[in-house]
Length: 172
Ligand code: NI
Picture 1 (cartoon, rainbow, N blue to C red):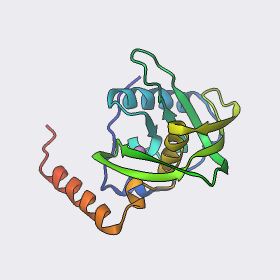
Picture 2 (cartoon, helix red, strand yellow):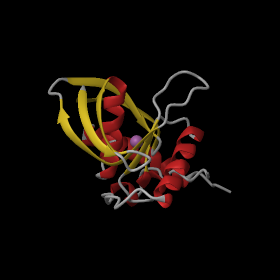
Picture 3 (cartoon, rainbow, N blue to C red):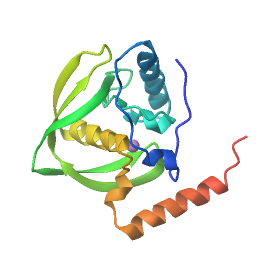
Picture 4 (cartoon, rainbow, N blue to C red):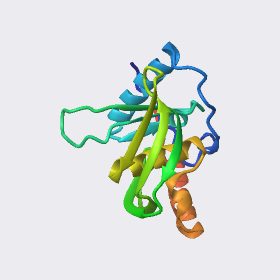
């Protein structure tokens, strides 16, 4: 496994629409292993492949809050089958939008069809943080970031802040 570099906003790659995976093979499994290790190293709870520069419809997640316990979840080609009209609000952040947080409304429950780590078809009924997280990650597959739900002004302030941070940072 290897820790990859997480791409941060502003970056055109994050706006790219990711492509479906034909079949879950060794390459995809190794990619999921690397994504999971990268996510854990960055203290994240979800990561989409495009965040490490790979435009494939693959997501890894682990929302387990217990320390020293791991409950990784893998989603390949996820599709939302059902969304609850009732909304839930969570304060969201994103590894690609470092140190920025905002309250976002999303459907409180959803059903997701996907392929798991072994390429087996699965259906997940999600609510709470799991529902929010899977929707946030699935947005990445469409090139959407959580800050896109904010007002234009708020969003441009965040992007400006992040651009400034980037230009002042020398990674040696
Ligand atoms: Ni994110």
